[in-house]
Image 1 (cartoon, rainbow, N blue to C red):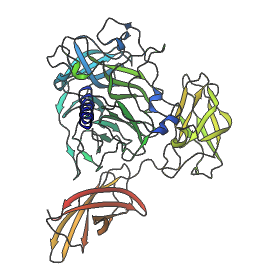
Image 2 (cartoon, one colour):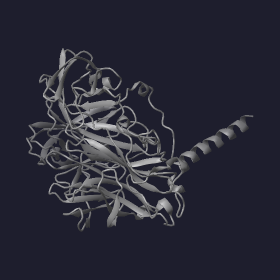
Image 3 (cartoon, one colour):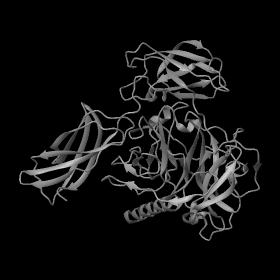
Image 4 (spheres, rainbow, N blue to C red):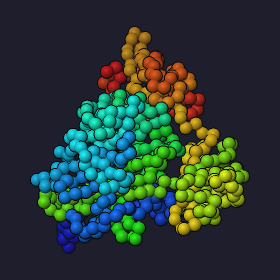
Length: 553
């Protein structure tokens, strides 16, 4: 009996492994507290009904994706499309830079490695997009504009640059400087966001953060570990963007078919919000009809003048990738799904908000198609830290007053949940028609653009007097830094042993300096040391860098 049960157990395990391997799907257990999230807590709650004018079953795909809006995004029977994002050109048209390969390719979907990048154009943000130009070879494109105004299209292992979105594109390579850090999962599936000074921050597939002064010059790695949530997942397809409040990121667990949403004040340090950012089932029409795509990948955002994400574009496929064969009824395309952009908020109080704050005054700005004085279910509003309002808690409304077309709302400060780490408190509620309302606000007493000091590995040199050395520190922030300190330690037998400390002088943006130090530490040249480099300003830790290295090599 024992042998029979063991055999059955092994067969079951093999079947489970096979299911994960061949189906590219596994179920991820959700935290129980997610069951308590209110509408508006999840990024997924922001998806709106799809738009289109041509609902048709006369197209490829499984029954679950037919009928569908064939004029939404881009599709045809000749090419299988994948990835891509949209920019509006000087010609007034919307340009979706998308990649694709011939649907009839012998490898089917696995032909993706031989993709071509297309400039596809539409008069409408949602499509239909039509190819007007083949730019060149490449996969997983993302278009942005460099500091000098030129268009840049990133593709895996390269990039194209042009002065004109409809013009000639020149192929080249980015330069990357890992700065003594491990590159997490290689440099592919990159995504870019422009900072306030037109420099660029980039996230790579593995979750490392990089910065370039202008979007085309060398990208420098700042992080020594991934910034993704500390959960089990096979992560890929990060997308990063910045609006007038904060930085945003979404990363996809392709095996679990669940994505996570993160936010940041500076693009380097991130917090993960609860709930799914997206998962299968989000492509829904106004009448409730769903386009049941098997997988959603390569999410990209189209942003409004405030930087708010107003539309998400996805690469979707109707079946398993390895089941998409040449000349069959399966394929892939790019789809457009509108997003609720959130309302515009301004905190009117100048003093820091704490647990002792009595009242909080907030202005809700009127926009085209939105009148805050008449359109809001006021009793539904909750404001405060997202850790509170995402679960239906937070501060409650006390009173309102008008300010021109805008509305000023005053909340009871009780229950706001704000801490010193808060940088973007959240509003959640409903419109009078029952639909979800949300928005983020900046805190008027917070510095959102700060110095970002980052160190490289210390270099040690042995002399007659012992060990001495230097360590390079650079300011990757957009403003000058004040005098700071750098401390070098290593871990031994569970204890941190101080090696040296030194003063870091003030640095202008992107300036770097070599800081010299001496140490009485006794090192063995053949031994690996687990170093921790900490840069601080007073008691505030500005950055840390963990590395393992041998001394004197």
